[in-house]
Length: 145
Image (cartoon, rainbow, N blue to C red; front, side, top):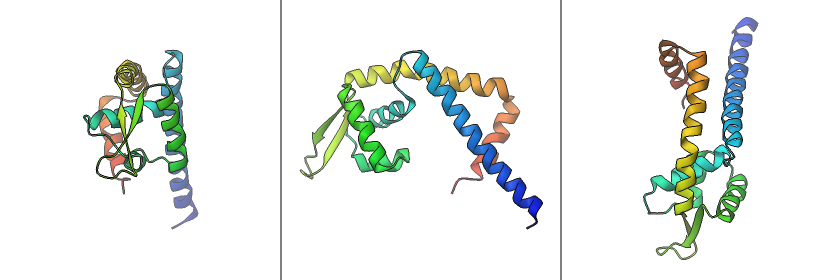
């Protein structure tokens, strides 16, 4: 590989990382402007909502959300303190706890989604045509490991 090739791949990596951060910042700002919780809260509440009353163990959320355990623990504590999730003892393993979304957690998640969705649409529709968006998906899909 030549130095030019190295530069291209390095530039691709930097562009991906910067684009990712810019999109996250715009979504976070949209949620904050609407006086809603941060994006990480939405992701947790969505996963709890998807469990359909079965509950989720914290380590399961960790793998689904790709957050470090220490960061997830603090995040869960803040969400619980706000009344949007509750922890219950796991009946099959009394040492473990299951996490459940509360009614107020589901209500705030549903309130967050239109703001989140609009931010996504504003970002992508302003920057990419439909054809470019399809190509973008195809290209990024190749990077999944």
